[in-house]
Image (cartoon, rainbow, N blue to C red; front, top):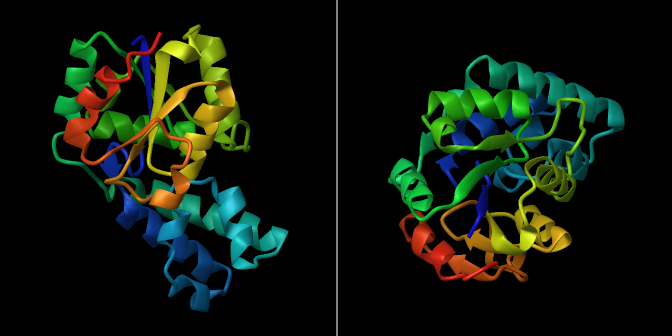
Length: 214
């Protein structure tokens, strides 16, 4: 195994409290309080440029909601989260197995690096990848392809670990194996092309070792 690409929200950390609070703030700011009271857990993971339109918002409303979301999130919402128990120990175990670790998140890079530094994840990462605030690399397949080009990692000896459909689809798009994180925010129907489904984060080092890639 040469490289493990790791999603953030729902894979390394439980981050829904700050994200949902910021989404609801964004919806209230565009005078859509009725939407703010609905179940929005499904929005955690995919890019908001894709998710907000699914609420029936106009292009202008989407832009305004995302701007309001970002204002609330950067004011403190990004830190309303916690690592899954044992996350740092799992990252250390993966390194001990000889893997190079890379963050591969749909969260904008500008925010992700602050979060990984705050929660002690950053020291384990060889590089951290996330989209730009202008939407560049919003699709995780494009982001993962970019990361492969930048790092020189071989997709055939690497694995993507994530909890949502875009993590699994991105890996398939670049010819990389994937592991689905059952402990996150995704559902069984999203993991059809994953090599395996991992039950607990503590099981991740063994699941990665069992792939025998390369």
